[in-house]
Amino acid sequence: MGYKAAVQVLKQADDLKAKVSRKSDWLNDGVAWTDQQKLQTIYHQVLVLDLEYALDKKVEQDLWNIGFKNHISCLQELARDKKNPHRSDCQALLTWALESASGFYLTLLQELCNTFDIDLPFRRRGNVYGQTNQCIEQVDLPQTSSCLYICQYCLVHLGDIARYRNQRKQAESFYKQAILVSPTSGHPYNQLALLEASQGNKLSTVFYYIRGIAVKNPFPASATNLLSTLSSAIDKDCPTEKIQTKMTVNEFIQLFLCTHGYFHSVIELKQAELAVKSLNSIMTALVATQSFTKDMLIKITIINLYALKHVGSNPNKIDDLTKDERKVRGAYSRTYWWITMCFF
Image (cartoon, rainbow, N blue to C red; front, side):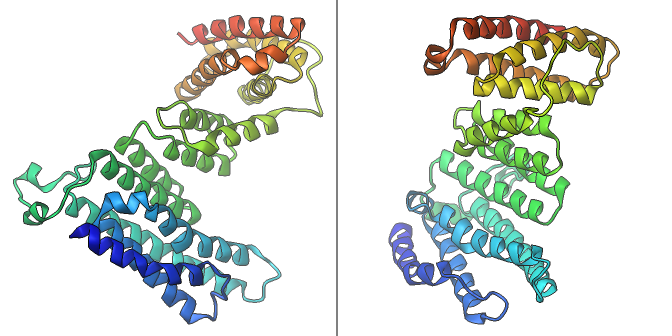
């Protein structure tokens, strides 16, 4: 019964989807908002009626992209435009749209958990406390993996909405709750990286992009984002000319990421070799004086371990290296094992 109802309800979305996808005047077009809300309601109903069918039709993706993300992005652009005479109105409308989106996903998450008797670390099912749900017997429960996926998807986008609202702590909380729900998914790690990038913390940004890659189900954009971040860390204007023996923690992190940028892109390996020697010369002193926080040391270690695997696991790049470059690659691997061991 749920499947047939879901199919019929989803058919109603076809015309609305085309209308909502068209560019609209969000400030003055009331019909556009009405269509938007109708589409959101339809997708909500389909997800609750038959989750497996909804996921097969990628309803959750259309819900976010067409139902929310497109018009939120449009309003963000209008609100940022200093030449826009209606900028304040756009900002007010954006604030309302984000509040509405947050409420929608919180409600959807709650209803999904109730309907499919989903037990989450931060939201236990009723029977844990002796309650019974009579409605469950009338519903064909979806696979556990599907339930966890949709809950994580809701949490990730609740985090995105909080990030758009500049609620950093709230966004971080939602992303980390999403990780608790499904630790093998790279999506929330990628979003944490975006959150750190917005704060200018490049070490944490690289760390979370790597976490988004090094899981059972990597997030596709994380690899591209990692490459972009490491490439931007390369200091092309001030190349290393000699081994440095003194530097601050911030300077160390900057050189550390620059070095990883060289190796990740397999470029300027002579510069990379010199940079590694500089890092080696100062690493022990910084660790001995407890200049690094524990969090920084953990992230440096994870980045090193990932780099060792990354550099050594791409046969296409290895074949392209010259004899000298292969020597540098070998030195890189040996040296970074030594740096990692310094932490212990």
